[in-house]
Length: 110
Image (cartoon, rainbow, N blue to C red):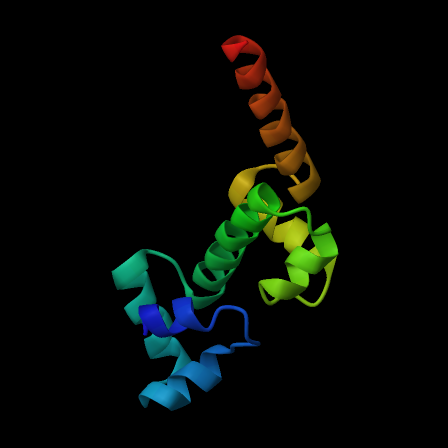
C-alpha cells in the first residue's frame, strides 16, 4: 500500500479508491498507514507530494504552479498550504533560501 501510494502520488488518489484496490476500508487503510509510516492517508500523500515538490523546486526552474500540478495538486494554493505544514515555509521562500545557501557556498569557495 505504501509503495503504491508512493508510485501514484501525482494521481488524484482517495482513501476509498485505494481501499477498494486492496480490499480494505478507508478506516483500515488509515490504521495500516499509521502503523507503517506513522501518518494517516492524507498526511502521507501530502508528505510525498511536498518532498517531490521540494526536489523540483531545487532542480528545475518550473513555476510553483507547474510544480504543484506535476506533483498532483490542482492549485498553487494547495501546494503552499501543505508546504507550510511540512516545511514551515512557502515554496517560494524554500526556493529562495536554497538559492541563498548556494550563493553563500559559492562565495566561500572563491
